[in-house]
Image (cartoon, rainbow, N blue to C red; front, side):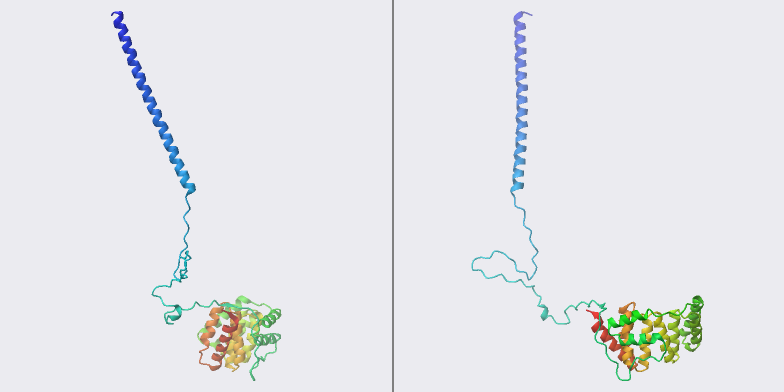
Amino acid sequence: MDKKTKTGLFDELLEDKKIKNTTNLKTRIDRKHWYWIAIAGTLITVSFLLIYHFTKKPPEKLAAVKAGDVVNTPAAPNAPAPQAVSKPHEPPTSQIPPAQQAPPPEPVRRFADIPAAPNVAPPSGQNVKINYQSEATTYVEQMIMYARNTEKLLSVKQAFEKLSKPPKGDNPKARQLNDEALALIKQSRDNDALPILQLAYKTDPSDIEVVNNLAYAYFATNDSTTAKAMFVETLRLNPGRYIAWINMARMYAFEGNEYAATNCYINYYRFAKNQAVALKAIEKTSSDPHPILSKACAGAYQYISSVMIIR
């Protein structure tokens, strides 16, 4: 191959290399061009988003508008004052017939341990004297007298609780006898239960359940004088024994002493563990056929509802 031919081939190769280099250069320039365009576009987009985020107003919170509310919107000049929106197709409450109105909520009742109304003096012939010689008798009489005066009643009760109590005896044996007597009482065999309860009382005079049941047995066998004495002994053991107070109330009622019976029912309610149940029992007994018993319960119920219960 001659020199001219070699030189020509070399020049062609060189030219071809230049073309390739130029093409590669353009390709690289084109790639850088689109790269910068993409970066610029991204920056512009982010800038717009940031500007929008920091310049937009937060949406105002709208309060719920109820029927009957006045909406405070800017009024046009000389515009009339906005009127309340009334509920459609619903008459005012005062025009609803009573039968359609919702019943008022039940009053919240709770016992108010406050000084009650002034004490009511017993009517003529209705004193609370108990024919029983015992240091406990005076306290029971005073608790009946002060049934409507919380402050004095609780003061007497506190002093009453300090009295000496009977000595303890054989309690398991006394309870066994008590259970035997109760089984007879449930069969309406009060006369048979009485001697058993007398023995139980001698066995353990400190058992309040035995003493209370013995008092009931005397009452059931028409010996109200001894029954009252035994209820006094029951209250000596616990002046707040509410079952003893309801039994005392019934005894006074059957004796015709409405005043003492009423006050005993008030004490029964005052010391009851469940006063709602006690009040219902008093209300139910107010319809008893016995005239004095029903009057005593009605009087106690009225007093408790009006004075001792906060509504």
